[in-house]
Amino acid sequence: MTGDTDKYLAPQDLRELGDDSLPQEGYMGFSVGARSQSSDRSNTLNRSSFTRDSMMIEEMLAPNKEMHLAVAKDCDNDSLRRYSWTADALDNVNLVSSPVHSGFASPLPQYDSRFLVSFMVDARGGSMRGSRHNGMRIIIPPRKCTAPTRITCRLVKRHKLASPPPMVEGEGLASRLVEVGPAGAQFLGPVIVEIPHFGSMRGQERELILLRSENGESWKEHMYDYKADNLNTLLSGMDEELDSAEELERKRICRIITKDFPQYFAVVSRIRQETNHMGPEGGTLCSRSVPLVQASFPEGALTKKIKVGLQAQPVPDDNVKKILGNRATFSPIVTVEPRRRKFHKPITMTIPIPPLSGEGLTNGYKGDCTPCLRLLCSITGGTSPAQWEDITGTTPLTFVNDCVSFTTNVSARFWLADCHQIPETVGLAMQLYRDLICVPYMAKFVVFAKTNDPVESRLRCFCMTDDKVDKTLEQQENFEEVARSKDIEVLEGRPIYVDCYGNLAPLTKGGQQLVLNFYAFKENRLPLCVKVRDPSQEPCGRLTFLKESKTMNGLPQTAVCNLNITLPAVKKTEKPERRHTFASLALRKRYSYLAEPALSEF
Image (cartoon, rainbow, N blue to C red; front, top):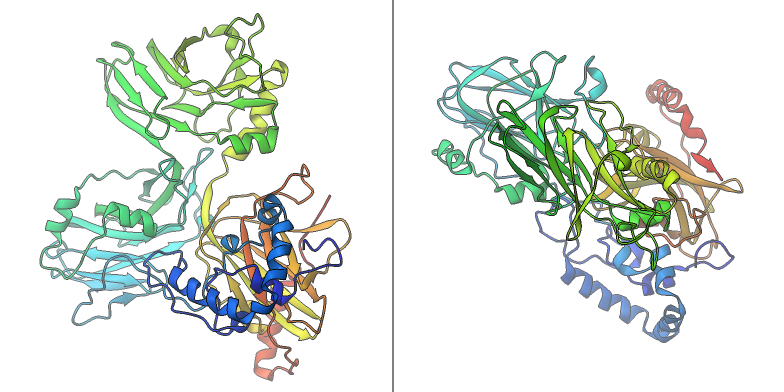
């Protein structure tokens, strides 16, 4: 079942275990039903199609049904989930899918409704969509452009700028940088730019902010408040419709409203921050993502009106147990912005108490003479990494229901920890913190295959954000796309471990595991070779992508993504035409590192 023994899943086993994917035509030996017409960018499964195809499979496999069901019942549920052989764990989608856009197309009479980099607009206004990036749209309302103007908009890589936008820990670009033009252009009213993004918002945990740069060197937050009702009035007379905020969030579209063009916009994903302009009269900030977190500013704490913010980052118990086991538990990470500011009067912070770190143990503040509840603080600001210190001895803590309150004269980042090994508290916190600050993105896993031998094949696995599926190198080398996943959350800078099961076995050295490192908006490619275990059976199997190595802690794991693949037919290698020889040599030289698969030793 797992690929660790001589036993493996035959094609009939894969069919019986269920398949709620949306395969390509003829995949796994049966026809495909109707594809979902949902406007979700992730191209989710049409359940009616799944039911119909499942009935077809049942009819095909009826003679062996009882035998397979008996085997399935003997398997432990955790084991099934670990190796993701259950139908609800499959992530394949149709390889031929149409992109979904925000709103409706509205071409000008004299122009096409799509643009590559630029288009012309005058006092009549207009709306155009980007042909290179699904979801990109620019709307210039009528009477907002003083003269015929060439509008430009393109997405550029971050490293192209000498001074990219500064990022603090936990922040990351949700899309490529947006270069608009003409830089410095002034309009007679607000114009709209819609950009697709790939940040995972995790419900209410994260949010998007906009930065702007007039010259590509200095950056500041872009602020422009315009209500939705006014936007609809602004577009009166245009054949355009604007999606609601909920639709934009579902489709992962960021809407920029501005009266002038800088040189660059940046869409940044960060932990949700509650902000307010607060002055000498004081006030209270409460977190929406963690309602028990709040910061109270007494009268006189501030001498002038400034913008203050409050962040509360939840700490999932599963992450803590996976990294630290039962050695410690932690509260949400609470940050007061701007950091490193000294208040004229102490402010009061309220943070929920973390769960107990062991069974039957107290946190020390309810009768124990040696308290194990520790208050950690990091006063570093800007882009500097956090430096956690234990300030429990200098900061009195007060219990209020299920929360702890304390006062502070300085804005900083605070964290409560329940740890019985007090000297290890800061070290454990740093270990967990490094995992928590990884920025989540929504990406797709895509697999290409090429078969030149009946028992061996070459695969290329990608983890893509806004990359194009039709890769130049794979097309040049005659690879075929054999699987594509729906949108799946992955973490920036974290390794993804790959395993292969079924009738396919990866060709790796002993004690090594395939690993793919993910970085947003970069080419994350993993080349590998697989062999067919039983040439008399169909050359199909399943690729499983894991967050941790399968030898890590020896604990069952939940796969990030599962993809069923079927190898393409064997193709004879043909001698390339002379006019393609030089291009092939250049591409092979550029991608020479792909000759060996990426491996990790343990």
